[in-house]
Length: 114
Length: 112
Image (cartoon, each protein chain N blue to C red):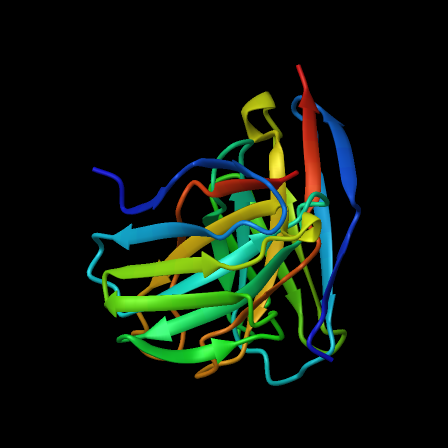
């Protein structure tokens, strides 16, 4: 039973299109994240939600909009896709016991913008 | 100041050898330093982590060495195996921020 699952695993689309990636975690965690991994493997945080509340919003273009309908789900919608959006997007979750929690990552969603 | 610098970018080690990956940070408020391991096509997974109140932590063949005064920490993989071939990321977090800053990653290849 997958702990953090993302769909779809692969996305190929044209510039200018809109796409969504869905994420679900069954670990009972209270915090979820979106990370972007570029072609050089660099991992950069985009957003984080804690109990459905947005707590981290890095300098990400407004074309990216996260939505957390409940604490087990965090979706990412991207408008007007650009070539530079091509990357692997990872969803992660953690339980904020104390001040730190182990990050559990999904397997990633590879987005290719043509 | 939020960066975590990681080196080397890539590393090739013979089976049975020691793999060493280094990281350095500037923000003295960081208080948790994990290492993540990522295999191709998978998400990163926690390997081992350390807090700055200890100088070393060992789990099996994996050891973190931590030098608080130098603001550096490193991962040592003893008796490296081909199955250890992966990308390794160091990271740092400041308590209460909910944010991990990742290093740039090290691609390790262990030759059989």
